[in-house]
Image (cartoon, rainbow, N blue to C red; front, side, top):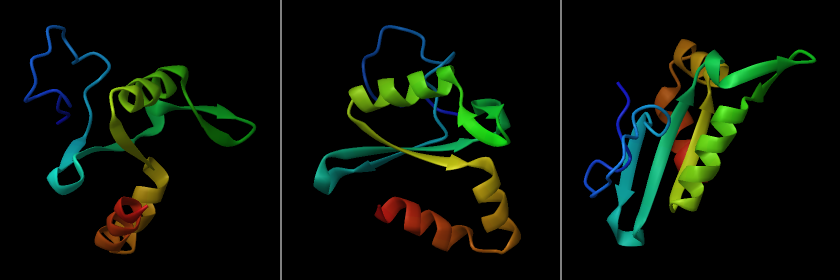
Length: 98
């Protein structure tokens, strides 16, 4: 279930169509908001055998960045591999330490 990154703010427009995100982590000490996005196959276009972020995904990430969110995108296949090896916690820790 995705959530609005503006849940505790006065936002007067519907964010559900493009700006909902998977997780928002608020780091109060650093006055930082981190968005974790688990990007499934629908976030990518296939080009020469590689996954390339779609225009919609690029727009969303750029917009969230301009709104002062730090965005961490997780490719669906990287997360699948972490899950299969039981290394989800270490994988997330590495992502969040960047």
